[in-house]
Amino acid sequence: MNHVQIKGGSFLKGRVKIPPSKSLSHRSIIAAALSEGKCTVKNIMMSKDIQVTTNCMKNLGAKLTYQDHVMKIDGLGNHFNLIDSVMDCHESGSTLRFMIPIGLLTHEELTFIGTGQLVFRPLRPYFDIFDAQNISYTYNQQLPLTVKGPLQPGRFQLPGDISSQFITGLLYALPLLDGPSEIQITTSLESKGYIDLTLDVLEKYGIQVINEDYKKFIIPGSQSYQAVDYKVEGDFSQVAFWLVAGLINGDIICSDMNKNSRQGDREVLEIIEKMSGHYTFEADEIHVKKQSLKCTVIDGSQCPDIIPVLTVLAAVSEGETRIVNAERLRIKECDRLKAISTELNKLGADIEELEDGLIIRGVRALKGGRVKGWNDHRIVMSLAVAALVCQEDVYIEGCDAITKSYPHFFEDYKTLGGIFNEWHLEA
Image 1 (cartoon, rainbow, N blue to C red):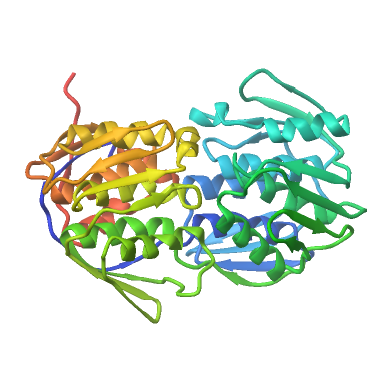
Image 2 (cartoon, helix red, strand yellow):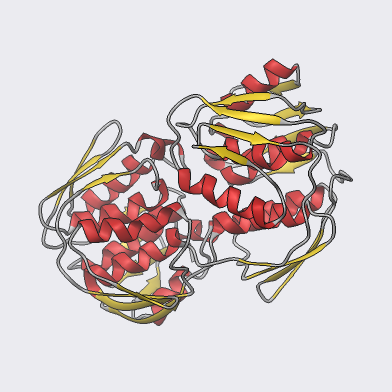
């Protein structure tokens, strides 16, 4: 189902089980695969990105089997058995940036390939490390990247304003080296929530990292990952779609959420409160109902993944909302600032695109129309949510992008009362 026609103005009502956190799924699978023994990771949804990470860990020699949302893993410890020198990361930026330092532990020559916008995603922080450590690599402005270790323990300097994924990649690899290391953050650290997730998973798998106020991370060497069982909690970057859907035209209960989560995208709840929105969070369920919200200023530096759907919320909220510090959205699966502003304006929104953010002037309702998904799962799902406040139908091109993170999104949309049909483009 690549193109859909969604009936405008549907009211969504009911309960939806939120998919497991993609960020924690990546991290727990990698940690379990690096462990000394057998692990079980529960509540895994095999989206495209998670399949890619699973395949890469298999390629390094770990044994992973998946059935009924449970992954059983026979870890490889620090004993790599490379099966293929090519590591295919498809469109997963997390997989690519996590796997590069881990791959260097094999001491083998590896070639990282990808598709879509991933081939152009920045890798400069790693190249600076390669140069400093005389690690050989070949790269011509885009993937493929061919590199051969070994990675050596030592002092690593990384900027904090490009992507936390570089830091996470090193935090996974450095404990397995035979000497201590430290990572120094040279600029302000954005997406601290993702680093918190990394540190939390590492701790659960027995890895020690000393965090000095997010400015320096000290990593003792010669550590080993311990085999533990782990359950992945619900994803705050995915629950954001249903929270916005409920607020603008619904009555939705979202289950399987952790009230004490360390996910950075949990900030969606604080932003809703800033916009004078109300919700209840009892046990593992968040309940939201249709209501009127007001404008605010949203800082995108710590929660870039939820900005597209928050733009939908702001588009039909009272007053002028500003999204600031969001320039990194331009180097995601697509240029998300341009994508979401362009497509929502087609539907009748009033959004001005800035270099590092958006100005969103709220309107009472959207009109509907034909839009594109930009090969980006979060753009597609945001536009589907926007259809709930459209006076006419919404036609979305390129809906298959949702398989990257939430393959059954439209099934949940339908269960809650959304009405849509497959739509065939005219020749």
